[in-house]
Image (cartoon, rainbow, N blue to C red):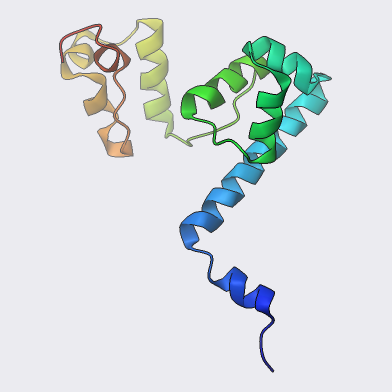
Length: 134
């Protein structure tokens, strides 16, 4: 029995593209879920973002590819995380300590990226944004 043209075409989709489409769909579904649970409309979300409603619609339809900065803006506007990087609890504690100003002097000297290196995360907002010498 021969495979249909559709099945043969789908089998040719690269693993990257499959994963990308999956993530884009999950992102849109999470936004829809948050909009529904908060009673917020796409128009109200767009207003909170300082964008046009068509911008939100394009992202949720998969026509635009949101950056991490855009996703973060959506998270702030909706008041809930959309992406969870599943960082280990020690890394999460260090991130919290960094932003609350409670990192030890030793940790500050080492730089934040060395603290989280075991999780393959290299975040040092001050260095990244040019606020301190590396």
